[in-house]
Image (cartoon, rainbow, N blue to C red; front, side):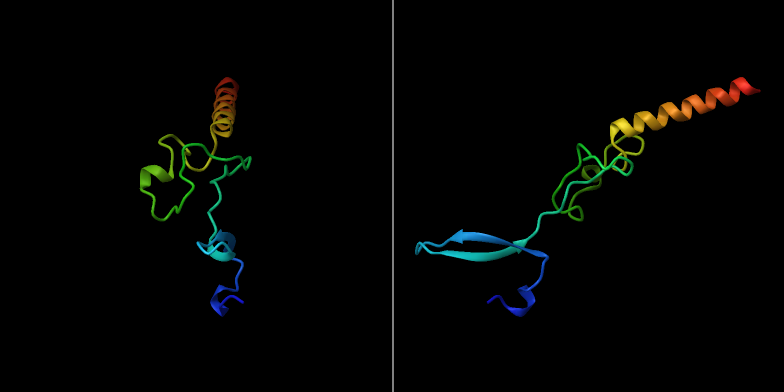
Amino acid sequence: MPKRFQRTRKLRRVNVRTPGGRVSVHLRDKLPGFRRCGWCGGILQGIVRDSITKASKSEKRVSRRFGGYLCHKCLERALKSSAISEWKTIEAT
């Protein structure tokens, strides 16, 4: 039976073979998920997966517009739509 503070879903169960040959269950922290795009929900490339609090600022985001928030496909779509809407307002005047 795990200790009272270990009875939580935040820990993952890992089967570990001991030197004596038996298998015991160790409780370890879960790995954080991948960072996701704010629009499509796809995985962002170039951003570290492990503890985001320990990562440096340059590892947390990509050095471009909306880096660390939008994937490159959604960013391209947003820039194209904003450019098209800008052209339409220029043509209307």
